[in-house]
Length: 237
Length: 227
Image (cartoon, rainbow over all chains, first blue to last red; front, side, top):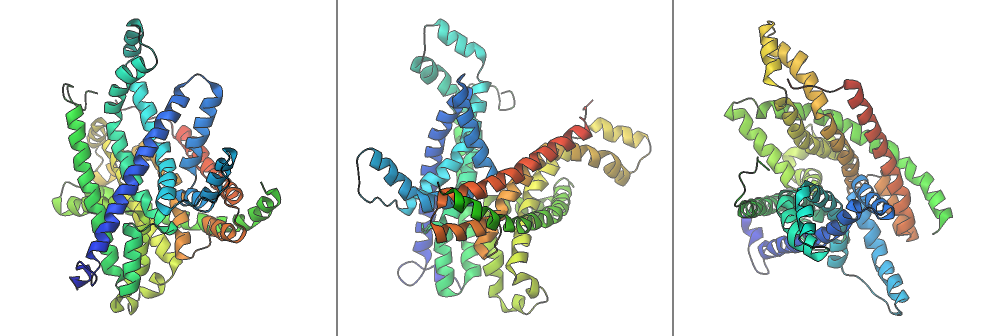
């Protein structure tokens, strides 16, 4: 029964593992893009500029209120033309086609970014006011204040929340299998179709996802412990 | 922007609303029952009960909903004993596969919300109820449950929104709800932005109504003071 998972051309073992690798890659790049988006929009939400607040709030409301699948369809069907439209403004007139990985990263990154925004905003808010004041008293501003004083603290506080966002992001990447990116979901569909063994391949996919979530849980727990050194306990924060 | 297309597609897409609401409400009700059972198993204190419940929640929360849906819809149908069983008339229908998957999913997620709600009920209330001579079952039904409902309500409101969003996945197993119709129109007209705006607004309105309703219920039920 398990010979379908042999390596090489006769089995699907190596293909499934490559699919798992693709899932991890696209999840990681989406998470990074999401964190970047999260930092920008959290800054917008925390700023005193009315229009920036509205833009950031609209973004998070839309992403959190609309199915992920619709966002993926929007980018899958509209992503290339949007990029070409922007390229045209900069004077490039050629045809640009985005590959499934790029579209997937942008789509899942945009979704993940909305959750990261809230996590980072919450983390910035939980940095003690005295830290800002002390930084300003020392004559720091801009990068000196935010980059050297506030950000390291925000990163530590946001870590558990980012761990949750990672889990959500990991599962959301299953949706981009509908655009043709060969990750775990897509690969198990292909294998299930060609071997007529859907049960065993979907079970294998479930195991792969559980292994990835378990491993990443361990990693995030380790990172949390490392960066909480010198602090009393998690509960005391 | 092709406003005429948006106008036309709006009337097509709203035809999917009944199916979305139907699937969401049936799975929410069934899922809530499942969630209460799983939550009670987890806090029962008996290992034979709490361990299976823990792994059930772990399994469902650790895997994508789409995979669960494929597993139920394609995976189970592989076996002849399932195809010959009395369950097959249900399991061969994408509609019921969607409801089963969403029920299991929301059952696992909500069980954690309910567990948190039950654990948040102050010991003082339980002790007071014991002092008044109420037995375990009465204490649960008359004291713990009403307080749990109130405490779990904000988180459960979020879960309801997640359910509305999750129901879009059943379009992948051929069901024509809001997202399914939207996808069909996009591939016909190639107007992703316009259709996204229309379908997205419909989802936002549905979710906004849920937020308002949950907020109203929260205010109606008042607050619970722990001590």
